[in-house]
Structure formats: structure tokens, C-alpha cells
Length: 447
Image (cartoon, rainbow, N blue to C red; front, side, top):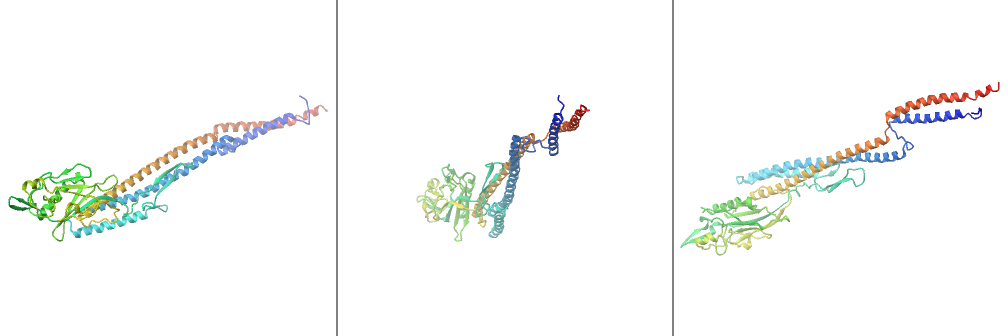
């Protein structure tokens, strides 16, 4: 090797290696101090780009989890309020059932109605004031909401409107109602031989009175024994109808009028697929021109004993969609009808008489069903949100792990690199010093 003074190649080489080991030491110390393998794009450009996308995803998922938890809170708020509404509806039903009992006086029912009215007012208050973050939930104004439960656009859960719990809309019910007014069983007569008998004093044979709902099968009522009075006959007819309520869905109520005559009110809870009350056909209940009826007659009409057994008012009376009045002196075509009637909401629930209490029970039952269905939906929604949060947590965990494998420093490797770089720094420094002494050897040639 040539001996020169101007160019010290050995020193330059030692300086270059010292610089490299210095850079390596700096990088290793940076990684150990930050805990990251990738501290800037120069460390791993592709890895940094991937890691940044993963960071955006994990941060979005963290917010999405909070959003889903907000959804849980909203559902819990609404469901909790509906739970209290359900409790009040249960109490209202108890009161309606109590009011339906014949032993209650008018004053008793007024007292029951007072509590019912207070409960409906409280249900209204709960419906109007239940809110979450300024949004009313149960007054019908909450038409639905979209919850962002993912880190990307379109990762959402849409929640439909929550049931309107205001008493004006809660518990609508459709039913058929018919009133037979001014009934007088004493108007029914039957002639046996030359003797005339009041109709109620004769039995109505089994299967003569029949009820048919819609296109269903005809339900035959049992035998009605001979009665001692018109009042007893009316009670017998009502009892016979109500014996078959479980089969027909038709309930009868008896009320004595101020004029001494009677009103029998028939209620039908059967509705079709359009929520319209179905026709109820009654056979054998009202007077036909050639026979006698179980409840009322056009005029005293003679009939043979055999005829009494076979023609107890063969005419039919339907609960259909028109209004008229049926009573003593009327024909089938004049029957009072209020079918497909809808009671909308429990705001005006009335338990001050027996048939109104019956309607109240049906309305409250529908309201309870409506509330229970809404609570079920909200419970299912809470479960969905909870599972969404669990899924978000799993995604966050896996994506964070993947990101960590890209950007996190391996301390075992980096500490080894640190030791190596430190040794190389010390050796390099020493070698630069030695290399700088090499030109001194040229002076020995000049002595």
C-alpha cells in the first residue's frame, strides 16, 4: 500500500463505519425509547401506511362502541319507562275486572273510575316526558334513528319508531256491539189448546238458540228452563250466551231500564284480518212473524206447543256495520248495530258500568300487549347492541394486534442491536484515532 499524507483512506473508511454504527445506535435507541419499530416513514414506508389505516379503523371502532352503548342506554330508558306503564296498565285491568262484577254499585264504580283516571293521566305524563338526550321516546315523535356502529360509512343499525305510549293511541281495540233495547219477555205468548201462557213460562229446548261468528261453525246453546218471570228469562238468555263465550267470543250484558224493560248488549271481540269486527249471527233469539222469541216479540202470537219447540224465533240477528234500534215491536231489520267499532286509546277508558268495563278490559289487554311487544323489541335491541359492542371489541383487539406486529419494536432484538452498535461505536472511535496516526509514519522516511 502506498504511503501518502494527503489522502488517508484508512481513516476515511474508519470514519464511514463509525458513522454507520452511529446511525444504527441512534435508530436502536429511538426504537427502545419509543417502543416502536416504525417511528417515521423511512423506517418502513409500506408498514407505516398499513398501520395508519389500522389506526383509523381502531379509533373509529372505539367511537362506534360508544355509539352502540348510547343505543343501549336509549333502549334501557324507553324500556324502563314502558315497564312502569305496564305496571299501571296491570292495575287498571284489575280495576276494570273489579268493575265488571255485578255486585258493584254505581258509587263503587265511580270510585274505581277515579283511580283509573289518575292512572291514565300518569301514563300520559310518562309518555310525554320520557326522553334521552333531548329526544322524546314514547310520545309518538320518535320515528326511528340510525346508530353508527362501525368505523366505515354504512356500518350502522337502524332502529324503528318506538310505540306511542300516550293514552290517546295506546290500546286501540275493534269489536262488534249490538243493543237489544226495550225487551219485554211478557210480550211472548204461546197457546196450548185454548189456553194462553206467557212465553217465559215455557222452556226453550236444547240446540234451538244458536250463535255463529263470521264463517265459523254454529255454536248451539243448551236448554233454557221455564222461568217464573220475565226478569228471570232475560237472565237465563244472558247466562246461556255467556256460557259459550270461550267458543264464540260473544259476551252479553243485561241492564234494566227505567221503564221496567230491559236492554241486552252483545259484545263481539272477534275481528278479521283487517281488524274489523266479524258478523255474529244469532238464531232463535228474536221474534219471527210466525213464532216466539227468546228475547222480545213483535206482538202476542199464538203458536202450538210443537211449534214452540221448533220455531223459537227462527229469524237471525247480525252484528253488522250499520245503526238501528231493536226492541219490542221491532223486526230483525231494525236491530241496533255498532259493528267494526274501534275504541282508539285508553284515554277515555270508562268502568262506570258493566259493559263499559268489559270494553275497558279489552282495550287495556290490547294496551298491555302493545307495551309488552314494544318492551320485547327494546330488549332484543339491547341484546343486539351488546353483541355489537362485543364484536367491536374483538375487531379492535385483532386489528390492534396486527398493527402492533407491524410497528412495535422487538426489545430482544433491539437490545442486542444496541449492544452491537455501542461496541462498534467504541471500536470505530479507536480505529479512527489509529488511522489518523498512520501519516506520522511517513516522517520516519525523512529522518
